[in-house]
Image 1 (cartoon, rainbow, N blue to C red):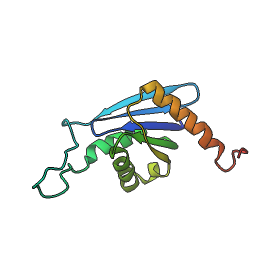
Image 2 (cartoon, rainbow, N blue to C red):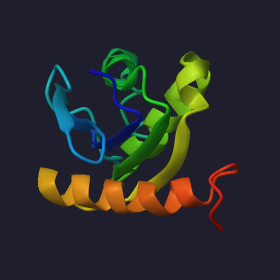
Image 3 (tube, rainbow, N blue to C red):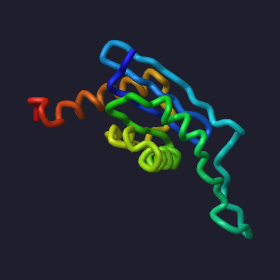
Image 4 (cartoon, rainbow, N blue to C red):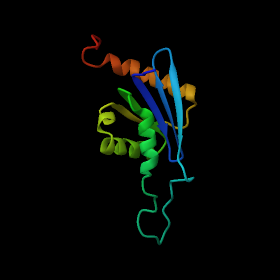
Length: 133
């Protein structure tokens, strides 16, 4: 089944990808392998104290999003911005599908899907050729 819209909620441990239409949805969870990826800065250490971006993790999330024509990226911290940066650098076709990047705490899957459907109803009405403004 092919879905036009997708939403991803991501943090440094896992990503929930939901591809959907008005009536149906398909959900996939992508787990970060190797445990906690986010390290905090410690005094007296070189560098930022943060682990480097896990390219394998972001590639797996991008693979789950492939084929989506409109994408909403959400999450509570920097992982959403790192995913956006990764997609723009490594998945140019998917990068053109990014509609927005938003902060979101820890919604349930139902809350995430409801928000994404509302977001895209408004977003799609504003697109050229929609006849609505």
